[in-house]
Every structure is written in C-alpha cells, then in structure tokens.
Length: 171
Image (cartoon, rainbow, N blue to C red; front, side, top):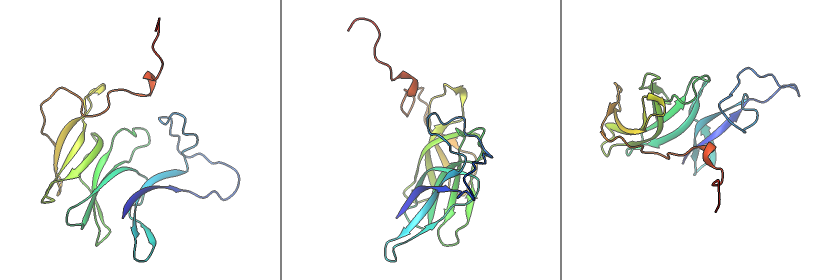
C-alpha cells in the first residue's frame, strides 16, 4: 500500500525557527516545518517506509501496472508551489528520476496499460493562472511532455476558494 503523509521536522525546543515561508497556503497555519512525502506500507510486516526524500512536496502518485515503478509529481520550489515535476521511482532500487523540466502545473497522472507512457492532467501556463488544464502524454523514460488534446476547455474544477460567497440581491 502506497500513501502520502506529512514529514515534520521535530523542533529542538519551543522556539519556532521559520526558514521557509509558504505564503501560498491560505489558512493552513505554519507549514515551514512539514513536507508531504510518499510512503509504502508492508502489510505483512506492518511497517511503513518513506520512499521520497529531499526538499520537495509530493502531491500525487500512480503505481505502474507491473508494480516496479511509482510515478509521482512534486513541487520543488517554495516560491512557485504551483509548478510540479514528474518523477519515476524504481521500487527495487529506491532511485527516483526526474522526467520534466519545472515548467508545468500537474494535477493528476496515470500509467498507460503497457507502462511505457503516462497521461498527465496539467498545463504549461500559456495564459498564466487563467490557463486551462489539458491532457498530456509523457514517456516513462523522459522527454518533453506532448499535449494530446486540442479542446479549449478545462479538465479540472473551474472554481476557486474566492467564489464561495452567497448570491447577492433578492432571492
């Protein structure tokens, strides 16, 4: 079983030393001491093992059909947390390989039936934050992602947290 969980730096005392400032995260409180990482739980032994390391925040993952690889997307730049890179982790060696070039927002991924490619939902921000999410293909060995849909409609939720207000005017 694979899952995502926060990894929290344990403070040495009660003083908060803030060495990174996540100003993009409305209402989450202090996030300077945590990053989300990928873990695997061995059900037969009841032990969990952290699979990703480093200064990154993993947002999503997909296990290959063969079970030998896990693709995941993660933010590596605290000043641009909306940019994600796609990595492939070899479950035997534990080695991760970065496949993309820090130029896209990725929100979902899935393996092709033969594990040779991945489908991504994301965008390369052609219209900045107003860009539509589209479908992309990425070779499992790397290379530039290829946009494979030609629609001008978003593939994800089109609303954000600023539109939760009630209707104005008479009801």
